[in-house]
Image (cartoon, rainbow, N blue to C red; front, side, top):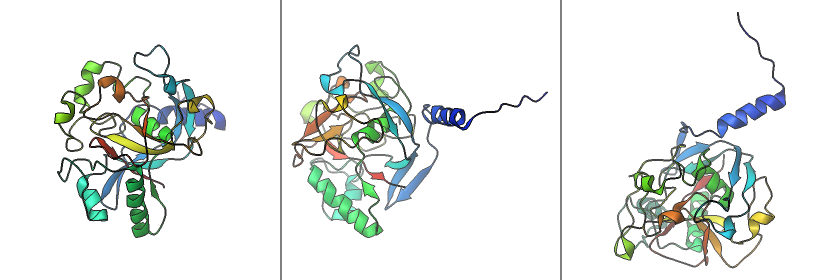
Length: 259
């Protein structure tokens, strides 16, 4: 006997959304301008953190639902020094190696890089991810502190983080395990600039559809932790910020490409 199930459009949409939100490896990887991008599906997730989670801060509260309404491409890894050199013709990084992330780049430097990429493409398709897009991709359908679970003792399988102090350096990209959607180094290696201005109270009034952050501010947001940061700073929800002109040896970025 064949059982037929009739579903309303709303019910079908809910199932599609549920499937999209589950932690499964994204299969569609495309290359644009020499950079590999993973297709990230549209969907909803719980952004921020609950007070009960050890290490969370007031800036991560309240936990709230956010929906990303359009799919997008996100780079598999941080932009490497080779990719930066190919576009900009220089390498500002402290720890030089072609396949390490480019670092010591300010938010403003990154915007200059993006402007050159878009000029080559002939369209304004490349940009930094918003803070919401970044966290959505970092979580990859999970609700735990890290994309693999809650136990920081397992973090070394997925991330380079603060065991070396400032005497160490960043590492070549994609040397640790990816998250469930096939993105590498979303935890650790270098912090990643995102598009938004920073406001520690923004989540209290954030829209639940494609939030873009405050209209203005003094600081820009960066996410993800670094090879210097402690494990608690690498959580998917952790928020940090710096002046747009800041350049440090553990701060880089990852590109988004619009569809």
